Length: 149
Image (tube, rainbow, N blue to C red; front, side, top):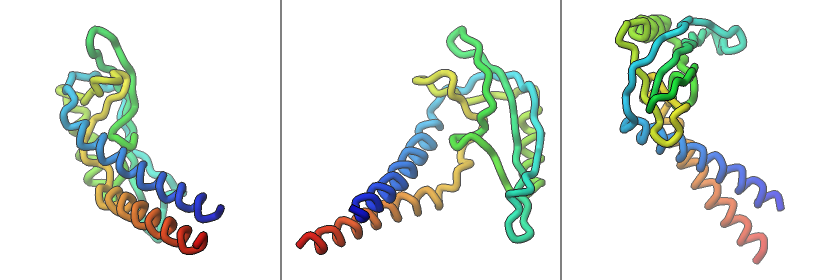
């Protein structure tokens, strides 16, 4: 029973990684539409300080119109946020967003879902999660078959 539960957990890790990667690649084909920036700020989270490293987060709020309907969002990327250890990178993105030609990418199937930038998810971790999940599911199935034999 424990091997089944562990297998399901590792399978879910794999599925989540696969979904994030697929949506990340698919989002590059989404239509780009003009947006109005409501607010943009850089914050740090004290609980995110790991071994003397600080993470800087960029939060945004914006509106856009797609197919005649107005939407409001705060999503920056596929995973919803943008964080970096480099304050310079975060400030550079903030400056780009404050440009008057601000645009977002809108999901054609779910118009209220939009993103500002591509490629923010750590693809290495997603591939690792996918690989790790598949390998662990295989191991758990192998162990399960040995135990039941």
